Length: 431
Image: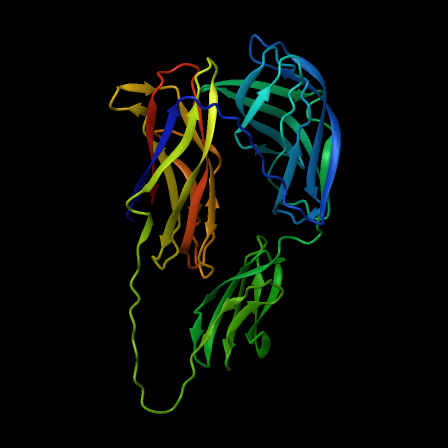
């Protein structure tokens, strides 16, 4: 597989303009089935020196869906409320919160985006709400799964140095801060594959599936959604893997294992028409996997900032990049980012302690794309490749499509540096 790269230049200026920074955290998408519960949790916190420890109630507001299936990944929103920690100093940091939860007794972590924070001396910290996902454990069908807090860790980035505050419920874990009713039904059964997936009348087809109750299964051929009358039988084992065989005797365009959910597996019926046969062949060649524009994007200007003896942050937006996967197969891809140090090659000045981070985004731009894409987790771009977006491999299913990748960026500047204009080159690569 080939690897393509292109480079983006990032400018950070030191000048006369002081930036007033604002930040926002994406919330949970509204849903009619979301249930919100606010629970006071007594926390004991260990903060970095010289900050003393603290303890007291913290009101956690947790939003969960009312219902889900076992094994399903569901959205969650956490509003931590004011923490017991009272900062000794007024300070600006970039905070990441890792809420370690027990979901039906299974440990899971929901992590916030890296978010600028202004904390006033003598006042309790009040972190913003953030969203993520949890997985409902397998084997919980027909029960109510409680969510409890096991620990909350806050990493505060101050000019490239991390200061960690750990808050633990007393007793540990907390009482329930929310719950999800799990459907009595298991995971939805699906038809996964047809072998073969085409043929004329008389073709025997083996259909496979997943998540079926153990025992006998039946399968059916369909045409325009209606059964054709061709059926077969098979079995599902203790793991839910089903195998069913039927013989196609008449025109059909889909085959399913009965009880499975849509989409069913497509079947191409080949009609045997009397007359002179004249085969027509066409060869479809694989296209490229690429990221662009190949010439690179223009510099991203993060504005100007005035030296004031304190660590500061500036924000900007990476321009959109295109990803095209025309390979016509089942492969996935990853887009990663690396960067060079912040330098001014003409003056020789450098900002060794400056950092740049990204909160990636990825969306499908061609509605006919057979694949979706997933944005990577927010984080710092370094000389080690950081995953910013990906497309999963398809197994037996076709992958590919056209996508757009970008994201919000933030530069964290040290308290002192030469007043100059600096440049880092961020390189995005696909493989």
